[in-house]
Length: 423
Ligand code: GDP
Ligand code: IMO
Ligand code: MG
Image 1 (cartoon, rainbow, N blue to C red):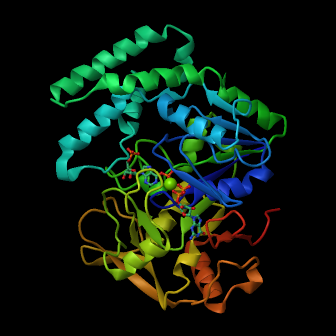
Image 2: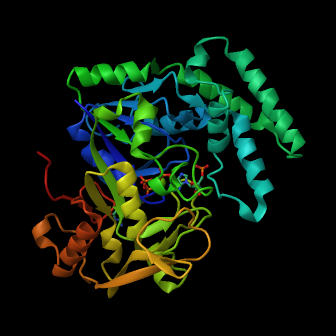
Image 3: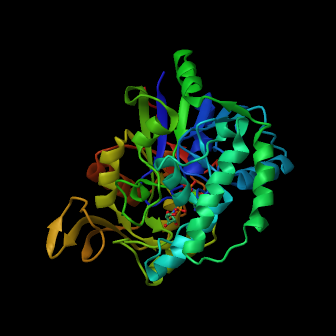
């Protein structure tokens, strides 16, 4: 068997959590492969709403195994709080959530360093989620990180050494902090992790594939936030693209099966950085209001704009997307006309290629399509789609060169229309 992947194609928050939950019945194992508690994946069903941060979104459907893979960075304190909240709502995960020994730990000082670096950048700040993601991955790459498996062996010495190194940096930066205030919770989180099964997820997943088990890899963030291919430096610190599933789980590229690329019918971004199709007018505000575009982790208002097909085409190329999933089309239900960016004007010249640098003078060139002006939120099948909506879908499929397999018309699990099954 192969590993199917589900990846955000924009700047995150496309609706990955909802769709992983919808697809979970088709799989035996759901695995997160990168990112950490910077993610906020929302699921809604039976009148309940959950926001998951480090826990994969496959926990609510029929006792499947969920894995936190080696490419993830894990904050023990936030992990404990997340699991306890799930337990309080009747979901005990201790028997079916496994953690890779090779996943790196976010130390309390990583969070402080994240804040210190952002303060130092001033108006050029990234607008991170403040969860210590960048500093944790920095330590991984500079070979100074602590891994979950270290909890089992000589942990205190490694921890103290890392903390001393971080404190030197914080003091050099003259950043004021109170480590004691956050260290206790963090330590409790480390103890808490011990009740979960720690695995060598690379062996575990490859053995599962050999036994004919089906695996879905759940991406976090989105392709435009990828450390290599996103709008650098306004990105996250991991590979959010399909290749990240290989390095973040230990599966060979030849073991990747379907690649589900998920996008909103428009576009959003949270934090700083370029966003060519951003609307700062009342149309953007209408999208924010109707789409409830406020960060699921930080509560920050999300910047909103029209769909960007130049960026989407690039993401599809880098990820090797085999099927598209379109979310939140209901947010556009009342719009007279809908715009789609089909090219950029860079320094006066029109291009359909995604440029090296999005900063500066990138101006979107739009085509305009008629809106469908129909409430689609109760639709259950494709044959109910209004004509203008079908025209929008066909236009996207033609421009992007990939079929749209799923259309989502509301936040609830039930508001999902699957247009075809793969062979
Ligand atoms: P993720 O990070 O990719 O999992 O996405 P988020 O959960 O951060 O953000 C998506 C938001 O849109 C959540 O509040 C979802 O409940 C909501 N949502 C998902 N699909 C739809 C949809 O089709 N229509 C509407 N209106 N909301 C949706
Ligand atoms: P999900 O998985 C949207 C953004 C931050 C910031 C940049 C770097 O819910 O789609 P970081 O804390 O990772 O160092 O922040 O990336 N960002 C996200 N934006 N959705 C996310 O996750 C994000 N995770 C990080 O806002 O601009
Ligand atoms: Mg999110």
